[in-house]
Image 1 (cartoon, rainbow, N blue to C red):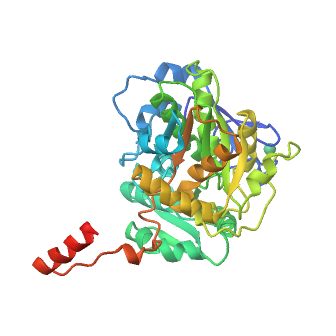
Image 2: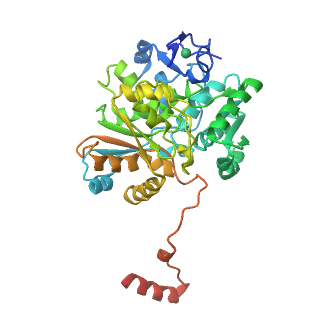
Amino acid sequence: MLLASHILKLECVLCGSSYTPGSVTYTCPNCGPQGTLLVQYDYDQIRWNYHAESRDPSIRRYRPFLPIPYGNRLPPLIVGGTPLYPAERLRKHLNMRNLWLKDETRNPSGSYTDRGAFVATSLALPEERKLACASTGNSALALSQQAAALGLSCQLFLPLRSARKLAGVLQLCGARIFAVDGSYDDAFDLSIEATAKFGWYNVNIGYNPYIVEGLKTVGLEIAEQLGHAVPDAILVPVADGGLISGIYRGFEDLRQLGIVRQIPRLIAVQAEGAPAFVRSLGNEALRQPEIVSPTTQVESLAVGHPHNGAMALRHVRQSGGFGITVSDEALLKARQELAALTGIFVEPAGAASYAALLQLLEEGKIKRHEMVVLLATASGQRSGETIEQREDELVTLARGSEGLQSLELQVSA
Ligand SMILES: [Zn+2]
């Protein structure tokens, strides 16, 4: 594999060992799969190559920050450059003056995971390596689309429940689906074993060190969209912990370059039925999250073993942040309210930030005057779920004048 000249080293988040790029592909050889590697850059090179005035609004504008060698071709689908909305009606509803909503549903496959898939496919491209990934759905959708755009082979490991919902869409893009009769964590482990056996290129979050580096463009964009003002808090749903680390990394890069002065407080949001990360956050002695058996019905959050957890624990603590859990019921209610007040329809996990904000305002842990960013992480349009209809509000009309008559009655009622 070609190496990016602006990467200095890879550093294990557990034991601190450093590796030269190219000497290790995935995790720390001393610590095994838990020893996620943090990419360290030569910031002088990034400073030299980064042109803030670039007119490309997609994540390509951040190419100098990405772990992609300059010789590599970039994937063709437009990723990133998603809107950061002032969400006026939401502000009014909550009596907040400085609330923002980052709309990640606008990516090609409808979620932030497209940013990781952008890096993954670009790295695999020169040698046409076969891609492998475990996913509850979002990463699989992202990878299948971008692999299709480049003609790369794509093998996806999904828990059976997710595979049943998404296999059709994924197969349209030419991906091979392996439905694992178990949890996401089982699918994750199997994907790693399969990778070793068949020589595939594994791009799991928390295993492949470069995926978080794609996700960091969320942080880079938020900072730029706010004119490099640093928010008081960013609320981020945590499954494997890749996104929250990514946002930290984005701000950290900008701090290294002297563009922002500090890192926003990162607030980790998990489902009550999968609280491994949040539960471990408060215990400073823990350097990696404890493992739980998820009971939440919200698939994107049903992760018992946050694979990027060691890195994310460090990042959330360093940001001065904390964690919070929300019930499945609160998530569904928040999703409905978010759609009605912003016009953005997310999957249940996509409303986790908003559900958490409601709780934190109530508890006084977030103040109404603070600058707060919520993430709408993934669209509800393609998750394969059926949305319950309110039958009593569904008005059926006959054709023609008869229909118009009953409509008049309805409207005047
Ligand atoms: Zn290590």
